[in-house]
Amino acid sequence: MKNAEKELAEIKSMMERSTRFLSLSGLSGVLAGIYALLGASLAYYWIYFPNPPYGFRTILIDDTVVFPKLIVLALIILSLSIGSAYLLSQKKSKRISTKLWNPAGKRFLQALFIPVLVGGIFCLALVLRSYLIVVAPATLIFYGLALVNASQFTLGDIKYLGYGQLILGIISAFFPGYGLITWALGFGVLHVIYGSMMYYKYDR
Image 1 (cartoon, helix red, strand yellow):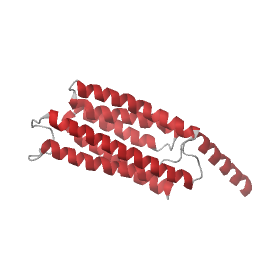
Image 2 (image 1 turned 90 degrees about the horizontal axis):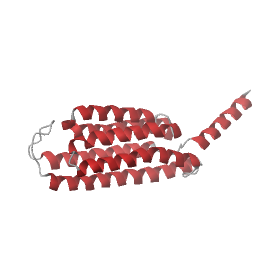
Image 3 (image 1 turned 90 degrees about the vertical axis):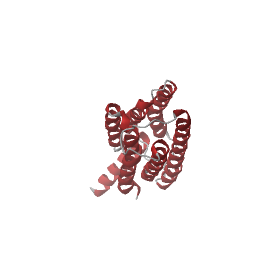
Image 4 (image 1 turned 45 degrees about the horizontal axis):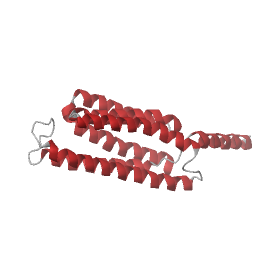
């Protein structure tokens, strides 16, 4: 009986490895959240210093100076997050004896990056048209959709992170003046919480 249960568990594990991307690292989520929080703090300083209103943006700034800096900062955070995810996922794939770029991994990346890429192009159009106040909710919503879409090809828990991003994106859309705060909560705080939970649940 025990041998049969062991064989069934092994078959289930093999099926999961062939259909789901299991190399996603919880620590990469924690690091992505830390990068986002540090970036949001720097952006907050650039926008509001020396008189931070701690809330709705009520001061005028020279967007031609600040926004190029914010775009560069966002690209740096994105690069660090992707780089950390790749390195830590590669390390985890070796530990669990699976290939990082297997068919399941390719399906996961496709499901994740199509909404992210479309959302990035859409947000670029918003910036070029000076609809800056809705960029934060747009990034949260597209990222949330990407996570929910990709959850069917990896650990199912990731969809809850996606739901959190969607909720914050909708809130941000109704209260756009608090976009930086909701962005920090979504990409920063939620990532740290999610990554920590995934690390203790799957990576230890």
